[in-house]
Image (cartoon, rainbow, N blue to C red):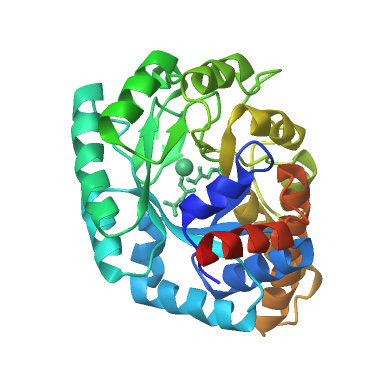
Length: 321
Ligand code: G3H
Ligand code: 13P
Ligand code: ZN
């Protein structure tokens, strides 16, 4: 069942984080839905501009609709990840999405407010909610690359002003993470003091954590042992930190890179171990199962595992009011 992102956030806030995963193809969709069936957890499917270029918006929409039919118990929202104004309007007009993200975080504050405000007005008129971004994460995101020295944590006072002036429904905040596989060196981690300061100014307001992949060292080692050449010092977010971020208002956690690592590990190992195989469905099936396992495990870390029935009851209550 496709639901609004807003409704999911109302149930989740302070109790668990909703995992938001990017999909680009059928195999990712099947693993994602199967993983959440196993975990009995709600989730967000998100589509990036890169995914729209790769598979096409229509193909992605129909993959999601087919998966929904195959998994009738599932509860999820469909979201645009890192949208431009143009992509947001196109997605809103399609009538398919639950919510959009307008990412104008690379613009100066006033321009970010102006663009976000415009998208919020249009989205709200059509019944969709809007995620915006303030601050600057490091790493690579779509076609924009931000190096570490230009990455900028979100200023809590600015966050309050930004939310008031734009009317956005959730806010992606820069709290130490970055996109891609190379996030932290040494003992760096999330800036909990910063998240707490933002929550103090915006109590009850859903915060979104981008760049939340964990980049497990054993996954990187297996990829490299099977012919990959990833930097073994790659390091991501400690998955045990999600549970500490949840009470501070982190309600949506974006994970993409880790799924790509699962894909790379499964396919490299499969082709290494089965040099005679050229039936792509064999590694494809292995990936779907491995991705489902991965999703099940993430749901546990996000505290969303086992919440599906509570979510269903809360949504039914809202609908019958
Ligand atoms: O933050 C970006 C997501 O990981 C999506 O990446 O633009 O390569 O699809 P993509
Ligand atoms: P990762 O690169 O850490 O998976 O982050 C994904 C993301 O933030 C998508 O918007
Ligand atoms: Zn992101």
